[in-house]
Image (cartoon, rainbow, N blue to C red; front, side):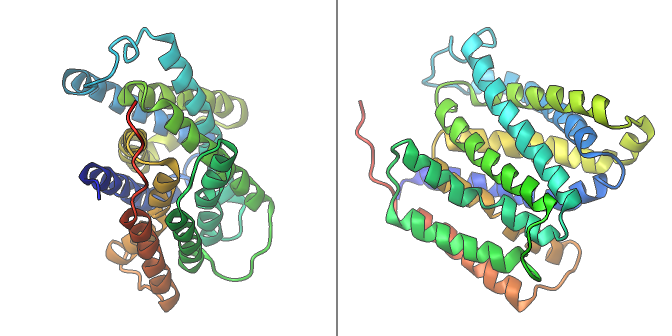
Length: 302
């Protein structure tokens, strides 16, 4: 198995760990501010974090890439960043609204993570070949997510419809990142992406919500975690890793955030894992191992 592929897979799992632990912080923050306010402030912090890191990356990164393509002055870089930023803005805000409206947080997690099914299906329309091991991994991962997150009966609510739309947009965003991340500077691409989310979310924030600085300050700790770690670091990890691993593999690795959310509740909040959640955890781990254990055929170098 390619060692670099394993390294980037582990890095993506670390990003999923950050996302999984962020769920508690997002829930606390949403008690203080609205969904668009939370997204606007969160991604403003993410933009500042990644912009600072871009100077370090300019010095030590981008080996083998066209310097002109990686320049801030490249209009194509900005176009790519704005495209994936608009997609991330729609997905993130649809998720926030869906969580507020749905009758079960577990159901919300399951529906959102269905992008692991949508990504390879969309990939078929783009004439991408997908290994049998990936399809097996998808089936096992979906079953694992069901046991991890679902409770009670499944009935469609208005919140569920927001989350279904969220999953679809996330799938498109993953494929868009796959198309752009290998060509441009990953950190600059992430910075433009987050700036786009900040601008679009701010527009809806001022139009639809009551902006209260006192409440924003009250939600500062959840915002810092969600902005700096979950936003700035984890989403940048996504872009970097997707330049090295297949999008449908990345989607399965990212969906393990549900597993880390459950484990985080056990380790940090001292919540006991039910037998149902233990089964889901084992299925998710098995799916990740199956996808990584059977490498895709190497593409011929041009």
